Length: 292
Image (cartoon, rainbow, N blue to C red; front, side, top):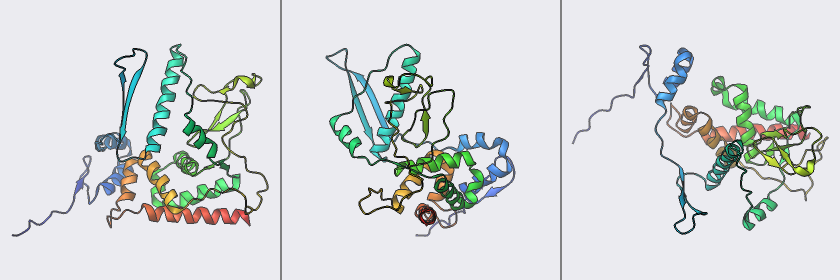
């Protein structure tokens, strides 16, 4: 039996006569040569994706005041699904308040309370460490960095660090509102929107988040930074942790960029581990330099 020769992969540009050898190369061409039409083109090219998780709320068959929730997931971390659902819950609570419907208080289960108590305090980077981490991330992205603005890179780095228990420095608080702040699960700092002299016993609220007075969900980094002792609790991070955080966030941030790293246009190899290893080495080097 003879095999039919395969035709080389071709990806023609719909706006000019250029033909590229891969989808990733066509993506680069469109973003650089046709920037005005790029976003509309990218939206049309975005591949259809199956749902990674579903949640269905049904009326309870015997109790009209209760509901039944059926949920399932496949091909995604259940911790990521739980985090996404909490974000959805926050959005519904915000919409409920806008309609004059007070959200129902949610109490942690005994298991969740125990897990929360066991979580180590997250460390806040010093300003110098934050600058070194940003420079390392920018250097690691290389040519990919041209398509990513500084604000997006900062957001990605903040989320990646938060995923492994480290926070970027808090910004200066707005003097017109209460200065109380805390870092949300993605590492973004939130400031209370109440009056500067409001009663802290009433907790803090910025319209999206509420938190008790004195809670920052982080341990501020002393200055100068002391040398870690043998009994000091540490958060151990390896290359696999960095790879998982980088892979998950870039898949959310820029699907085309994610696929380009996941399948190198020249070799077809998944290069995420190599990118993560390089970033890990740069972060380690920057941290060691700060300790000297």
